[in-house]
Length: 465
Image 1 (cartoon, rainbow, N blue to C red):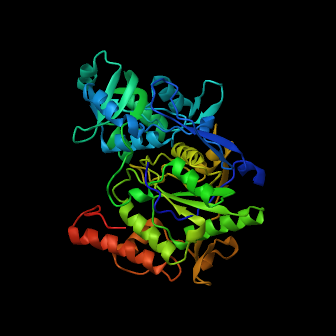
Image 2: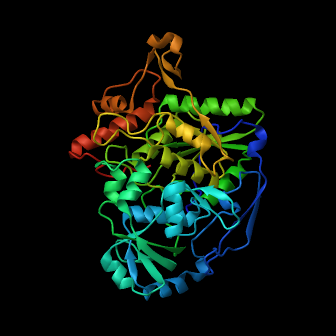
């Protein structure tokens, strides 16, 4: 698993049902898997008594082969038909291997794929339902399908043809690309970033099965210390004595409006009687579209936010969520919330148009700005999670800082959109004092400056964090 050497705590939540203190104090037993084979995942009897919310399915799935069996499994993989993974496939394998999608135990077979696509949920053997709103699938083409033949196992290999996982008891089925895109995004319009990157030109078949990952996933990009697995996060949260965990997902730099939402959420939880609410500041670390700020620069900016005291390192855990970004609005935000349950969060902050984007063809938002929080309040399998819709924050010109918007004096507030913020940073202009901490703003300016110097539309090089 990822190293636990660096962690900072703090995040924000939102309500799906009346918020009560007892909602978060669920004593659970969590067990973790070994690498024996069987469709219902084998696990070692590592048991953790915890006051954190129980993982989906009652047990946290962990699919990395124990170190004592890795040599044996690598020998097995060497003789199997091979499926080469793309960068996004590897990100999904990472997600599965650490249990973010618990109780899912591998790339989806057809029954799991259809349930996810049509019901946004999975029905377990005991009849219970867990949320699962985005397909986690692996595409192959006709040539790969022919090479697999009648084999029931395949080796998954990286870009250098190194075996990194084994997929067992496999099932191959048709890849209904148009239906998948239509049901995930609500449109088949051209220009959907994830669809164009990972679906449109992908193979016409999907392969599912039980996953065994040969070693913990590492990116060797200087950020692996931030990539805490659900198990590691739960250990860290227990170590800090958290009696409530509120998660804040983001793919953008943190400004003082975000910080206001997070600190105000903690204040509300303290007023409710919680003694030690901990924020999980959880930036998305997988695929993002070309105009988003790259992960390495975002993490450097988040670090400055903590250094400047905008967020309290004692009550904030900063970690990277390894999932790719789909920009699928209300469908995807359910996945973001569900995955945080498995990491121990019992409160989830949701804002305007979560996981949304502009329509790829028309000049409008793709999704209704309020639908994300409404869907989360009703989503099957998320009943245990407190969904906290946050109040709108804007720059209050009379106070010279970010504050909650007061419609009775709307003329006093300035809304600085992400587009406006990026424009200011690109032009090396400063935002109003109090919009973002100076150190964090400098990181953003340096990022856009690096682009102009290189002539690139995206990050020319990684920045050390």
